Length: 176
Image: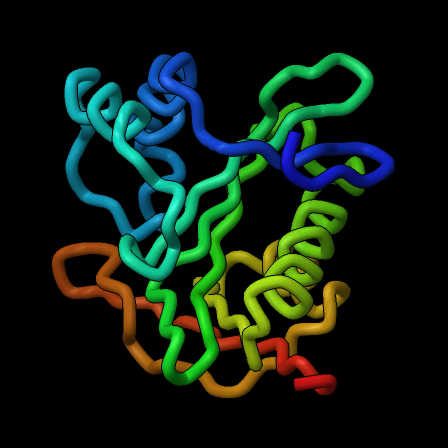
C-alpha cells in the first residue's frame, strides 16, 4: 500500500496486474475517454507491469492501482502523465471500474493523488482533459477543486466527420 484513505488505497503496479489491465485497456467503451484507438496485447501489458516504473522523473509518468480497503479488490487505476519537473505540472487520468462508480472512491482517489503531487512531488498544478459529453467526470474534478480553464474546440474525433469539444481543467497548488 502506497497511499491510503477511508475507502481506497493506491499502490504500485505489480506483474499480477497485467490480466486486469488487459481487460480494462482493451475495453472499447472507454477508448474515447482514454484517447486510445488500438488494443494492447497481453505481452505488451506484461512487459509494462514488469518494467521499472519507480522513477517518475525518468519515465514522465506513473500508474498506480486503486484497491478497495474493505476487500483489497483492485477497482481502478490512476495515472500521472506528461510529468514536467521543470514547470512542476502533470496530467492526471483516472479509471474506476463501473461497479464502484458513484461510491466516493474516485473522489478519494483524486484527493489522495493531489496530496501526493502537491506535498511530495511539490507540483504547482495538475491538469485533466475531459470530453464535453462526460459531465460525471467534469463534476468529479470540480468537486476535487479543479477549474475549467478552457474549451478545446473540435478536439477529439468521434466519427468520420464529427468531433467533440474537450474541457481543459486545472488544479493549482496555492501553497507552491
